[in-house]
Length: 334
Image (cartoon, rainbow, N blue to C red; front, side, top):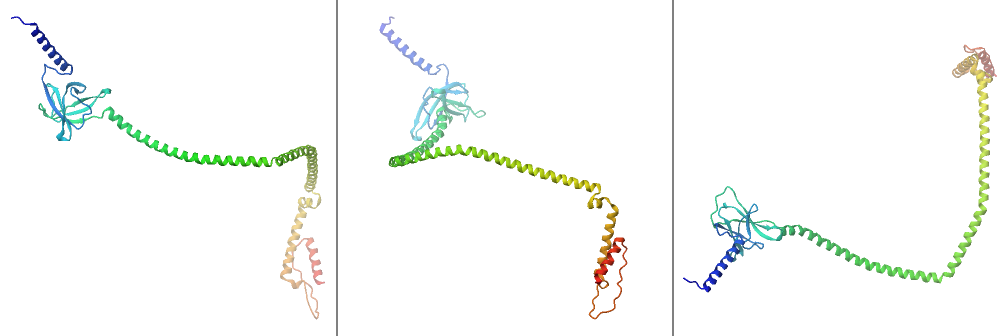
């Protein structure tokens, strides 16, 4: 049987298309020689997840996303069908975590097996979960910074507004200062002659003070010398007087120590010291008797009477005391 060229070309085209189709599916991850199980999961937002995105367990790719459908009757939620290798045992309650696939922004599903639970049948529902991706973390970290930047910008705007007000006040102050300077310049121009005369007088007064200072310096030097001389003279006289007084005191103390003079005899002659003590004691007794018995020594009579001899008290005295008592009696009688 002879085959025409057109049939050969058609068969080759069909084989080529089939190879292209299956090669493309193979490159997308489809394995034509192994059977798979399909599971479903519902997300509120898939953040760009598309078909053929990988499904991984602990970083190992075990399947892929088969399809994504929108459920308009369930508030536009998204139904994702995943296809896993048949040898992967999925249990009830396993989680399908939607996460970022590296820094390029791709998406993948990270499968978390709930161990210890019954096996999930083909076509069962997985538990949907989402992992904070890099963009979410950046957004979470940058929002407080942006809020602080907004607050700082607001504060800077307020400060700038205050600076605007300060600039207005400063301009007014500068205008006032310029006016004051102009007025001062006019005043100086009007009184320039008087100011020059005043400065000339001040210069003359300064010259006169300089000359006066030159004349006063010798006088002050002489006054200082005279004052020093007076101070030296007074100090010499004072020292001479003190030395003379000290010499006299030393002479007196020497006389006292040698028994010369009344004070020296009183300090050195014990007999004189004893007699003075006894005389003092006798005189004290006599004065006591005179105070207690005044009639023995003083008599008053208007018509006169016979005088009675006075009786002197018996006092044990020394020779000095016996001579003092009669003298006192005679003085009282008279």
